[in-house]
Length: 213
Image (tube, rainbow, N blue to C red):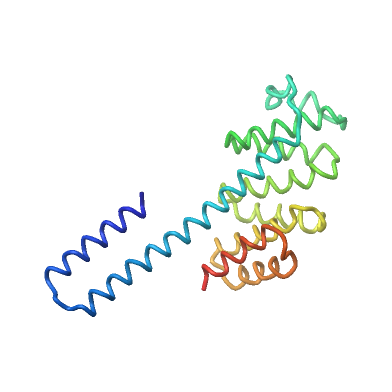
C-alpha cells in the first residue's frame, strides 16, 4: 500500500512536469528517480519479509519441538506452585510448550514470564538456551534494548556452540543498529558473516550491511 501511494504521487509529479516542461533530459532524470525508489522499496520489503519469515519459522520450530498436554493451558496461573522445584521431563515440556504457544499468540508478557520461569527452574541443554534466546527476542520486540542485549550476550557466552548462537550475534548487531551505533553494528554483522558463513544469520547480516552502504 505504501509503495502504491509513493509511486502514484511520483507519477502525478511526473505527469505535471511533462505538461509544464519540455525538457527531455530532466524528464529522463525524474523517471530514473522513480525507478530507483521502486527498487529501494522492493529491497527493503524483501529484507523485512525475510526476517519476519525467519521469526515465524523459529516460533513454529519451537512449538513443534513439544508435544501437546491437556494441563498446559492453565500454566500461567499454576506454574509458580505446581512446578516449583520440580525438574522432571513432563513439567519442563508443559512450561516450555505453554511459553512457545503464548509467543505464537503474541502474548509477550505471558511468554516472557514462562520463559523466565523455565530458565530459573529447569536444566535442559536444548530448551534452556532457546528460552534465553526467546527472552532476548521478546525484549527486542518490546524495544527493551538493554535487556535484550543482556539475554543475547548470555546465550552467546554460555552456549557458543548452540545452533541459535549465530542468530543471537546478529540480533546484537540489530540492537546496535537500533541504538544508531552504526560502526558496532557493522562490526557485529561482519563477525557473523566471517564466523558463520553457512548460517541463515549470515545472509541476513549481509543484507543489512548492503542496506547500510
